[in-house]
Length: 290
Length: 203
Image (cartoon, rainbow over all chains, first blue to last red; front, side, top):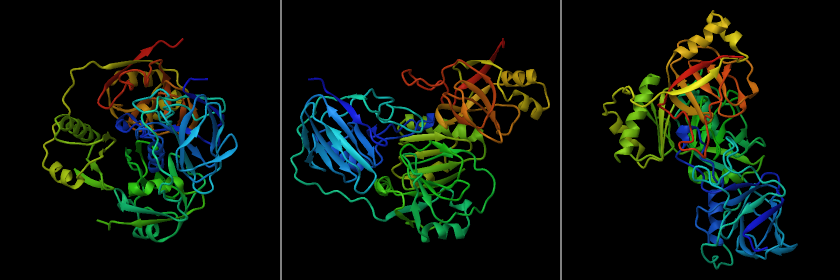
């Protein structure tokens, strides 16, 4: 049991391999993908001494359990949750040494949605177009973890960080998304623009890595007809025919045919990744209409 | 030409026609290759080109207004040929819509030369322009369209790289591999590629 690998014992609701994604291929229809809460993923890599581009695990609500075959340093961050090694409590948000053969359990999120687990050396599944990320929209990268999956780990790049505690934002109890209106705000009525930025929405349980779906008042269009397909950016707030805005996250399509009323400030997207279904949501305009 | 800001780091450049979008895309690629332009993504679409990952979108928008954008010149490189069996389940519907028989649908489709205007929907799915007649999407999309299906929608034709839901009219099938990430390039049909469909005898 000296090989650098880990065995998945409990895959959890949805656990995927994520790194910084595969930007630069949107013109071929390839989503950018990558960790939804990139801030938390970066932190876990720093804690175990990995470079920022190392691949980590992204868990969803229910955590996961893995058994490394050799001793590794691990760090868990993102959604706060209990962490145990062979049943004994271990630190969250700090480097933890896990002996070979021991069971590392990442428990259910106490708040927030997505947990990140970095291993010294990183998860070294075969990259696709320069990235190890699982892309749920187009199926690129490794499939989501299943019980029994074996994942290879790389050689540690450096020593783990010597820290006792790290500052880390808590998952939002209310999600505030700053938006810049456009490029298709002129496809909506003035009333719809007021509604977007003045009325409360809530995070829908239909949200996933492709988009944060919302519940709240429908936005009315001022223009009928179809919008020819056009390029989409991360954080685009697209409005499908039902009028409920969808915020595009990492696995979003690269082109789409529904109007984008606004774009979310990139610094607010990690919060969007951690907002549980039912979380109150407000869109705040930081630019006036042209 | 109109440049619309998209957030703080992107521009959506709107033009009048698909041909203008292709010409603008080619010009943007040329200027990126010379180092005159820095953009992480250049994404052509039906009537627009999206530039993402820009440092100063508003400055670029001003400069763009003064560019002279030549039409896409005829390309020297070979045409990608895709062998098709015209055996799709929607052939009768397309034939009825065009007022021709099914064999004529195949003849019309295979006689035209196409160009990949843009990609999207799935890795390696190209929207090919050059179809001489239009056809509406199916009223009810299929939950699973088999990989290799040759399809029509609006002014476009395309080939499904993998099995997925879809509302296009299926007129045939091909064994061509549209997407293979182990291959360089992974996409058989990148924007700008010229394409012809070659009919195979259906058994």
